[in-house]
Length: 174
Image 1 (cartoon, rainbow, N blue to C red):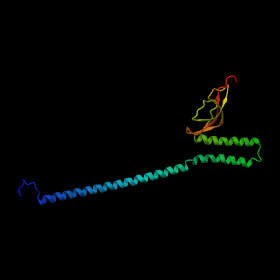
Image 2 (cartoon, rainbow, N blue to C red):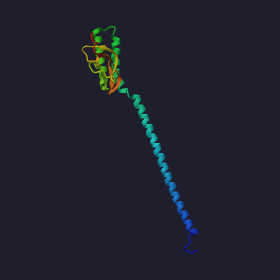
Image 3 (cartoon, rainbow, N blue to C red):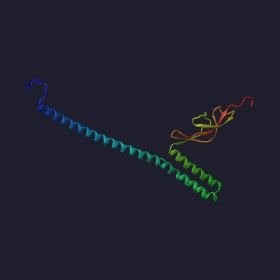
Image 4 (tube, helix red, strand yellow):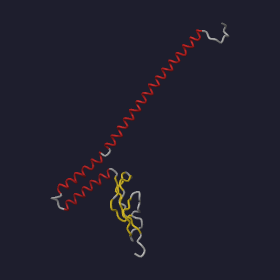
């Protein structure tokens, strides 16, 4: 055959075939390496997800631990008052009750629980629950006249609305 012939010789075909086999082996090795890296990354991601889930569960389980520890002193004080109620006079019981309330107030302060006591403030349905409306000549209409039950917020989030009596203008001629 002459050199102008478009057909390849068996040696050239053999060389091309070997070259293709080498390229295929290299590609297969690259694919295997990439697959191995992908599997390792997926396993690591799954481990991180499981670790995060365990951390979240632990945080939820023990989130109240510090607060509960603070309340133990309040409980101890109440138990002591109950044990001594029969023998104590009214003045010492009142003093013990004040001390217990102070312990509770400290625990609330420590954990950012604020009392909502809105006497005289405008009625806010986001923070207050109107239990009744009462006529008042001294308080502005739609203001809180009396608090029946204090409300509480935890870090600005409402735990319980304040139950209030809302003022309204007196009826004409009354």
